[in-house]
Image 1 (cartoon, one colour):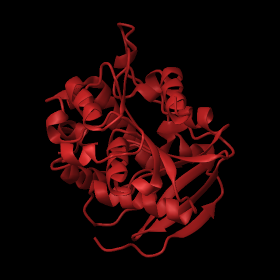
Image 2 (cartoon, one colour):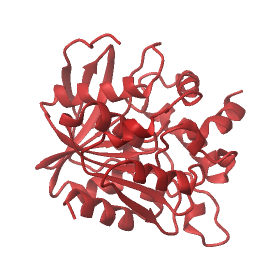
Image 3 (cartoon, helix red, strand yellow):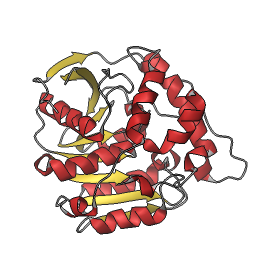
Image 4 (spheres, helix red, strand yellow):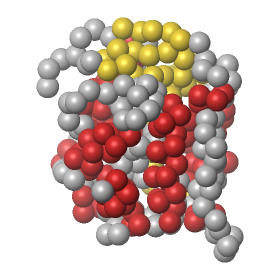
Length: 304
């Protein structure tokens, strides 16, 4: 998430990949997949100023890793049906989709992954780039035998989804992109200093220590992500106009870091894209109002 760059600085002072290898692991015990919740105090009753607890992954999923380009990408898989791949935001992990997995798994084959270097996935010293993260997603799909999937992305995950919709449209059934920017001008100056982002950064550091193969690697992850956020994304309007898969561009009414007009411009740049602005929520809408978020998501995935 390029969007937390200035806050993180204050707090912390292509070759083709080899064939994918899938490793199935038993579901981790609850103590290793959840951390104590951290919430933002809210004295005004405004949902968009809160950071509800990160949900745990629902029980009963099939968990494993796929080896892609020198890293092991963690996934948790639920349900059956049309594949839907969930892509979380920067510094987060697949648990952030817990409320959505429960709503989707009765009708879809849901795959939530931890991005390279995040959560339970490993990383290398290779620079972080959105196209590298997008290639990891394709590697996971290949390893799991998924030819084509709907993508649901939040923040960095939404940017990755846009990248794949432009560069690998044959692999993307449709894209629900929440809280994305397509260039650096889309960011609100100083937006990452909002209290909710301070809490998010504090929380993701604790979650990393609880989940990561190397619990002491959070600072290294932040450094790699910061290098990417300094220069990316930089999608042109022409490239966005080339997208032909169904797309919903969504955001919260009170997003702290994405300019509202930028979201509207992004939707306008993609032919036929839907624009969804969810009221009363911010960049963390899937936690703040999961019922509304899930309703919008399910409607889009159903083609309505």
